[in-house]
Image (cartoon, rainbow, N blue to C red; front, side):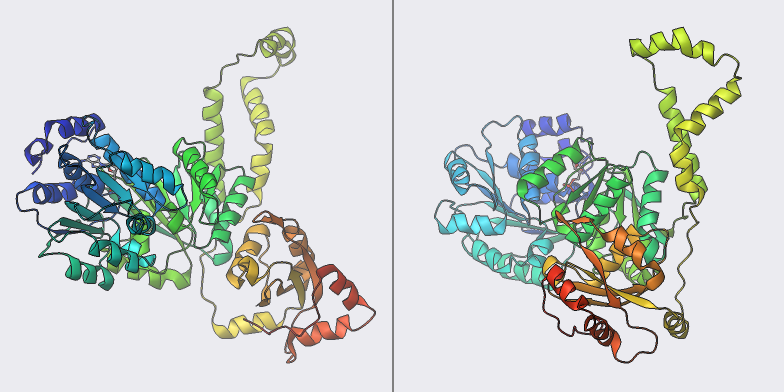
Length: 579
Ligand code: AMP
């Protein structure tokens, strides 16, 4: 089927498809539509990720199949997150533009249940829901699913990953046996297979492939970098591409906040999105990103689910995810239907194995990207500035007057070349100083163990203490990431790190300890300004007693311990060594 007109969809839906500008069905749609619209209503398993056009694949027949004569809910779509739920409901609304008798309602947690009950009562014939809230409504007898004709499980793997197995079981058991079930999933874990075996009848299976077999074209590039230079590389990649409109994926909420914050400090336009934020704050960030008030969105995987932004130019993996399927989900956010996209991954030598696993799993090939040099980035920024100058017209009458009365006359003896270089030199002074002493990236090389040890042994460490611990989500990787980002020009040697409940102790090269204290002090993390202090000597070379012995000796003398205790409010106790 290479034409929507041949699909068997009704006139009203075809008109809506034309309005959306869809010219021909995507491969997933070409396979899904005939199966869903044909007599017999066979069950279907579709291996398809986001970006393949799967929403229309199930949504068009669903809208088309609504029978205005039948009362009650006729189709149910289950999906993992509120964002996706709203997105699907919006898409279905578009498909139903010329079918005023189709009534789509979204139900999800964290929002007023009474409003949702009212919407169902007001004649919803298609319900899109997250599993928890849907089951809640079924249990309250406000949502009747015993007469539905079609059930869609969208992003089934993700729902199972998020622990919705029980809810899915309960909901599926409440639906009639003779309905049609469509299961969409980017991957097919064993639990999804079990669901299909238990609740589906002789399903047809189609696949849009793990990789780019769909409609999009994605270039997968990796950039090899030392862990300590990850942030600098990210920043330079962004600066190299003035038109970048992308999502930067991070592993933790804390990392998301830290990086978004640091990007903003560097003058880049970034929003943060993660599950610790209130729903209203998340909606606000999404809205700004869609309107391009933010050109970059730093996000965790879960928070970015359901984010449907059509023209994303880039997806950047600040770290590679552990599971290859997560990479596929992430990169599927760029290169949406028909357009091209770039998926960049910042990888250390150690992560190369993960990269190879992703290549194998996704049947994709990564190309090694060229590391941007400071000179190149500088050149790019200057060119960008010139573009801005070219596009500027002086409209301010005050400035215009001043130009004519004073400025032109005053500068009349300068040649054109002199004028240009003087103006550019002044305007770009801070830019050139930023790149002047920037060193090129060094490819990461795994140092042999022996070399590492001998280097570390020559360092005199000082132990610092930061007033944030496990209770605040701190862990050694977070701390090291924070240090690398905040003390960028120095490669600070870090010794032992000991994360306790409310405090974190860590050893840094004594020569850098002051720089580290001032770089971290006052850094706002989750709305709290960090406090950092020198705690005592670190675990020096060859000392067997460790940092505990060091601080004990120091703080037992001259009342320093008491001062520290007063300031930090914790009892002296020998902290656990190492991590
Ligand atoms: P999905 O995989 O459902 O998230 O869809 C990805 C994107 O592709 C959405 O932005 C759709 O609007 C777009 N899309 C879906 N089907 C088509 C089509 N046949 N032609 C062009 N764009 C499409």
